[in-house]
Image 1 (cartoon, rainbow, N blue to C red):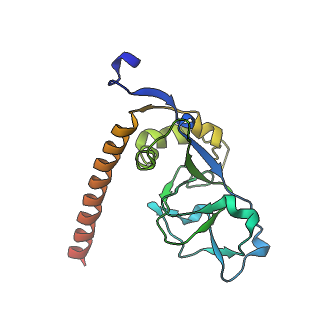
Image 2: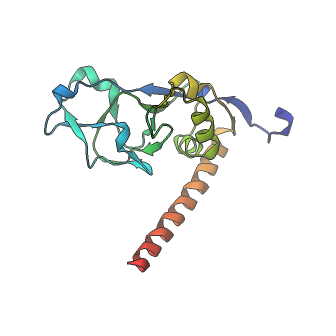
Length: 185
């Protein structure tokens, strides 16, 4: 199989390049009216994170490991939206709730975060994720399941180039859709 890959490409588990960190089980009885917003599964919508209906928690040093910052890629890990991916692009930090995963690049086998975002938004990722979702009425996936799937990885320089091209295409599609929506109005 590797002889069919372009030079420098490898087939490896996603987990060799990224770690999928799970969130914290914040106590709903401790939610407050303002503070640090909590990213819950319901906040992952159409490739982005929307905190318009968020809940808040007081900032504690103990939860520093669960802070979400701009650029983070998040994954819904249970419920009806299992496998849904969103990119956090807000200018303030939030907390990562339980059953929401955050992709973190591993230092020993670096990958481009924009490439990872394009990969986890792909049909192949969605199909692999949903195949592994287990449970009756509520599907669930684990970090180990997501990290254990094999994908084709180009060298880092090619990852950056591929991600740049796909991001440009996404922007053109988004702008075209905005124009269509405006014309329909």
